[in-house]
Image (cartoon, rainbow, N blue to C red; front, top):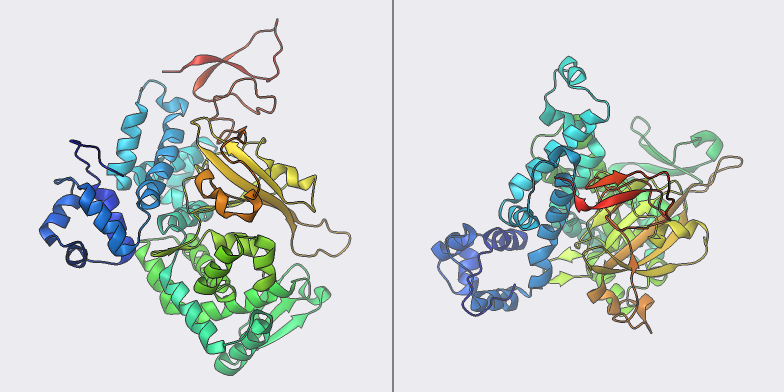
Length: 481
């Protein structure tokens, strides 16, 4: 965000986002920066440029990393816009990349609206016809709400996967309990019993069957299957407390999301209660301090906080507190068929909303090496490099002869943060060759990829019965217009 000599820098939306993340009014920020409130207002409306002096004062006053705050959302929005406008629907419209970047930076609300419209269009194209929507008396805008998972993912991204009210409530609860990690389960059970008259019972699998947790409202009992491991049991108790003791916080956060259908509203509440449970198990200040001291060694963090590998990885993506940030990680969870069931990004990794992941990313290789943690430097087609680690996890235990659930967890960050990770120790990150990957096959324009599953939608497929290439698909070098 540094200004060049003689060049004016207009960053109104980004400046406003920083102020809102800090929870400041325009008057309060003006006082902190030593400028007038009217000047702050003009900056946010892009009617006045931001000087290098103001940016430096902003960084010093609020202890901000301006590189992260300035680019994370815009890069993610640009990647999503680029994916949308790569669709053949727009092949007659040549939209320059710079225009997409300008739109992502200056008009995030319009970008958000385009994402929802395209999602509705994609659902309709995949078989949900407009006639079905009319029969259900729903318009295209509310049809998108029919996919609660994507809607909630969108809300989490809008909050950068950080909810300060829940963090504070979790810290307060841990302070009141005042127990080490190994004593958390007993303390939570006592809290439920004494404050909420809820008894916790570990039940045999033949009673619970496929259910892992069930709250019996009439008998005031929280039933947890014996299949759930120790970290999972503590998590489920903290989840129940979150629904009860943080109900007002949950409703406040949900209310800020605007009108929601019943399904996404319920799923968002469950997601927020899960967030609270993780924050109780791994309180922000202690967890961040331990992560930094241990160079983000996930297995040691799991041991120290009596948590699981996936729980720790997920928690690492939430360390976005102003003035106390961790590494901006991204996380992916896939099964051995490549289905994505989790994706979070507190950084700039451009996850695809409308497709899978690249098979060259070694997160998929963990199923062949279940007891090993794999690491990899990956490089996107635009040259952006990331450092990632991946490991397979099993959860929960399944009784014989049911198949054992297996997932692969991928965790990564921009290459500039990798030196802070224990997993990058001894590596020359500048010289390490990155594995060339794409966002997914439909958007990747790399040629001669032996694992390509489909041609890129931005290129014309070339069919030639006289030639067989490494890749099953050959395509033109020129973009379709």
